Amino acid sequence: MKRLLALYPKRWTERYGAELAAFIEGRPASVALALDLLRGAMDAHLHPELAQARFAFTGVPGGDVYIANVGFRQGGVRLERPVSVEREGRTLTIVELVATEKGTDLLYEFTCLPDERKNPDILGRSSERVVLRDGEREYGGDPNAFGSSQTSAAKGWATERRVGLLPIPLEPRRVELQLAGKVVGDWSVSLELVPFAADPTHEQLTLDASDTREGITITVRSIDASADATAIGLEVTIDPPVMTVLSIGGLDGMRDGVTALTLRDDLGRVFPERRRPENGSPDPSGRTDVALFDPLPVDARDLELEVPYVYVDRLEGRVEIDLPLREPVAASLGGCAVRILSAAEADRSKPWNHGPALGVALDLGGWQGDRRVLKPHGVEVDGKSGGMSYGRGMSAVAHEPLDYIETRLEKPLEAKHLTLTGSTVQVRGPWRVRFRR
Image (spheres, rainbow, N blue to C red):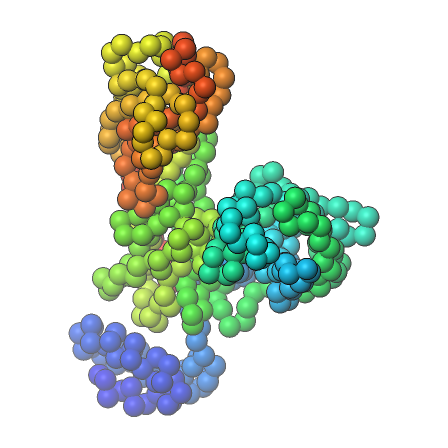
């Protein structure tokens, strides 16, 4: 059968020959296979464009566009190239700006002064106000949008921030970005925007394939397949919506090893998700609803995406405890049985302790069915909400339920009542979403 590959044009075999040869090896010789190969050779000669790197999935053409550092977005306008402005030793770089009818994604980087590099946390603690201006109209932050920041010494103590802004009119091709903050100062940068749509070198399609477990549905909405990568856009819904989805795969967006997503085909081949950067974002988009894989072989037809875990916040539910706690208390959080073992003044000799606090020892019970509580959502002492620290910490990739938390309190021995509110719950799959190429 492999001899029939000689009938294909050279440009075609340079692109697909090795993959087709591997496909032939995995199939028994037959007249039907020979006829398929002959028809393929004829098509390759009649249609030279088939030698270009293209991928085809069943679905509706014209899906959302995948943009590195942002994710899947409908067509709109974007910054054509990064813009940098330098002033008095500081540098502001607008890395990306993508505007659609649904919202605006902004990614910018700010490099601090040399004397500020002695205190690298200064950028991490700073906050800025960012707006876009179109004439007299002003568009600020979207309270429902995702935002994040990361400070890096590798870039000369620069902070990189992702900000979600309200939708802007898509007709103008020039907007003014205004940035103001105690550390960064006041900046005004003029930005030229250009339309963007589907990349003709990619196959960008819309799908509607899903799988449901534990009342949680994972749906594959978009695929962007190119010669460099295969990006899959995901959506998670809960019925009834009694919980808020936090992340897919790993906690806080971190996915690796057992928490990573996996793609399989009908030939038994496994395509692992590309390792996510340290900040947990894909490529990075700052979200967990995008999975990136290496380019797929042309003979990968029937595909299955496997999602191991989903993490949700359940804001309802309260555990009320009178202090001092003299014996363990049995309770329920997130629909799971838990125990509060003790509550006492935190040990100030521990390296993570930063002052007086109430320490609470927990037994969150482990897996109960396909769910387990990882931590309470919040803590109240004597009716007042307080911050919550994890003490010994929690790995976002290889996590286990917390067994100890602390809440800052000036006089922990005088506390009369402790309340744990809500919970972060890990739900175990796997969800397997199947779709056909």
